[in-house]
Length: 157
Image 1 (cartoon, rainbow, N blue to C red):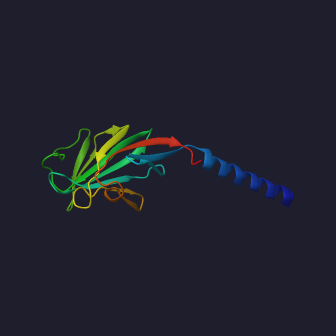
Image 2: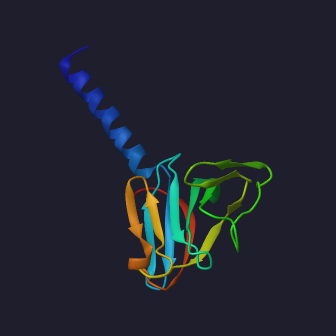
Image 3: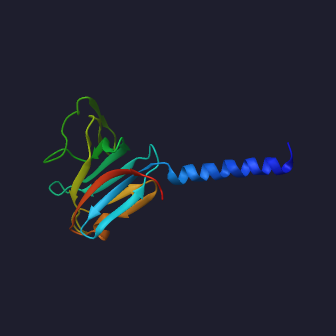
C-alpha cells in the first residue's frame, strides 16, 4: 500500500467518524423557562443531580437522575430527614440505605417524560442542577420561576 493510499484511508476514516459524531442523535436535557429553553448535552450514563432545600423541612435534598429512552429516571433520592413531603419508607421495588450523612432511597422505577418544578432563590430553595462537574445554579438563573425539565434526542448540529 502506498503512502498516498494510507493517508487517504486515514483521512476518510477521520471524516466519517466526525460526520457520525456530528449527526448521530444524542440525549439533551432541556430546561424550559419563561425566557425560552436551555439545552445541555448529556453523555450516555451520566448522572444528573438536582439539589435543593426542602420548602417545609428546610433540609437538603438531592435527586439523582439518568436519561434513558427519552425519559428522566429517578435513580436515587438523598434526604437528611424524612418528615413532611419527604420519603419515609423503601420504594418498592427499591431499597433504603442509611449512611452517616444521608438516607438514600434507591430504585422504585419512577420515571417521567418531564419534571416541573418551582425554582426558589438564594434564601429559599437554592436549586442547583449538577451535570458532570458543572453546577448550574437554577435559583440564580431562573429565580422564583417555574421550570420544566425534559429530554430530547437530537444531533449536535
